[in-house]
Length: 87
Image 1: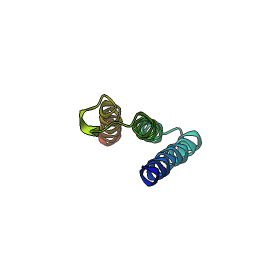
Image 2: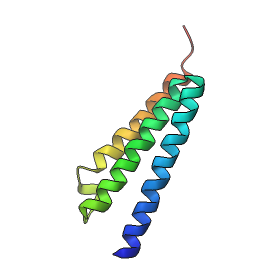
Image 3: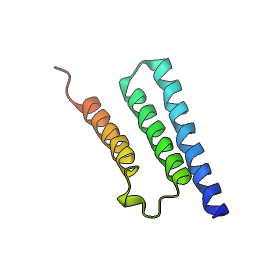
Image 4: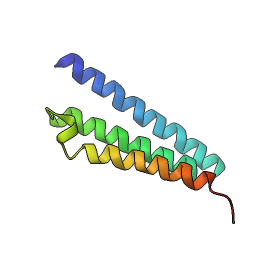
């Protein structure tokens, strides 16, 4: 289990690093797309950390999966909002 925990930590770190990266661009530009991406990657990092700490045997059947679903819904909504014609 040590290697799996190490990899889960590395993935969590990557998600949180991406969240900080997008948050920096959001602060610089004020574009809501970057804010949504930062929030989504933060949620993905949180979900991965909870998954590693809770030792969930089947990821797809746990409540933690809903965090990942929310993150992807946030990304999709942000992209749709960005590509909608201004009216």
